[in-house]
Every structure is written in C-alpha cells, then in structure tokens.
Length: 233
Image (cartoon, rainbow, N blue to C red; front, top):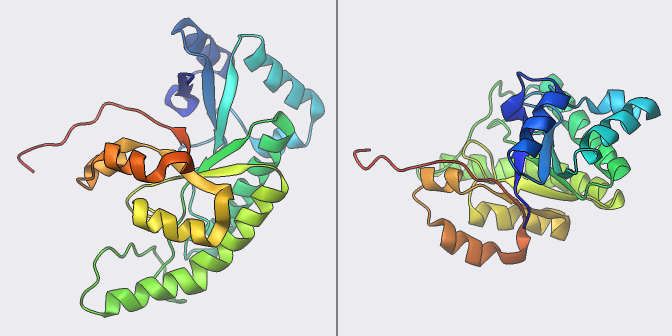
C-alpha cells in the first residue's frame, strides 16, 4: 500500500508547490484531478495530449520528486440530462483515459453519473425508494435507457486503452452503494471497479468493513478522510 494525496485539495497552489508539499509530508503518490466537479487546477488533458513537451514536463515534475500517480480523476456526470454538460463530462472521461494510457497510469476515477427521470428532464433525479411504484419505473428507465448504453460503451473504451475505471460510490449518482455497484459491473464487466471512500458509506449508515469484505478485489483505489456520524441526527 502507498499513501498519497488527491491534489485537488491543493488547487490553490501551483503543481510544483503542491508536489513539494506531498513529498515533504512523506507521501509516495498523488491522485491528479483532470476536471469535472473538483476542477483541473493541475492537469488539463487536452493540453498534455496535444503537446509532447508539456506531457514530458508534467511527468518529470512528478517522477523527479520520487512520486507516482496512483490515479487520474475526472469526477463528472456523463449521464446528466443537460446534453451539453453530459457531452463535456464524457469527453473529459475519454481524454482522461487516453492520458492515463499515455502516462502509464492504470486507473481512472469517476462517478457513475445520474440521468433525469425522462427525456424531457432538466436535472438529475436520484431514485432511492421503491414505492410508490412510479419511482421503480423511473429507476428502470434510467438503467435501461441511459446507464446501460453509456457504460457498456465507456467501459469498452477504457478496456481498449488498458485502463480500469474506479467508480466512486457517492450519494446522488446511480452507483452509490454495493448493490448498485454490482448492477453497474454487470454492464461494464471487470473493467469497472470501486474507488472505496468509506465517508460516503457512513452517510448511508453502511458498515465499511462489511462493504470491503463484499467488494474484495473490485476495489481498485481507496480514499480516506476524517468523517463521523452525528448521533443526534
């Protein structure tokens, strides 16, 4: 196991300064954000893919400090009912996969995404209850019409580039717990795994140790942060 830092937490610093901080903290790895909701302060895939000198300088900045990239992250929503936003997040995912392949990084981290409840939706609709039956109808529509077609293709794209996709199980997206993850993996195959962040499971009153035992080798990458459950709530 190697301990690293997700560099978007240091987005207020230039890349070199952020890397120095990580090295001085005694860490061995960095997870680099490429865009999406957390931003792209330290890595813009199109710029690196379009210029070998920029790519080499980026690689050298990390390797010269004795660090390695544990994963590239593009936390977005490629299933968003806003077609323009969905297109941008899908394009970012594919550019991140290409960049990971060029850098020799084996993992890309992202969210599963969440569609709306119909073709005319404007906002994502996260369905978490089975009754009244309208909700189950929406859920099946989401998975059959949006989730399965997208992730069948996206997983195939990642597989063709030799990249494994670690889905961060997060409330608000279709894959948010172990059951919904397994449904996604049935679609994408073993290219799809988990970025295991127990803080998101605590929200849902889930025991992370039980989840680890269930997910086993489907865990591709791990996050850790200070989290507690407010007993009053």
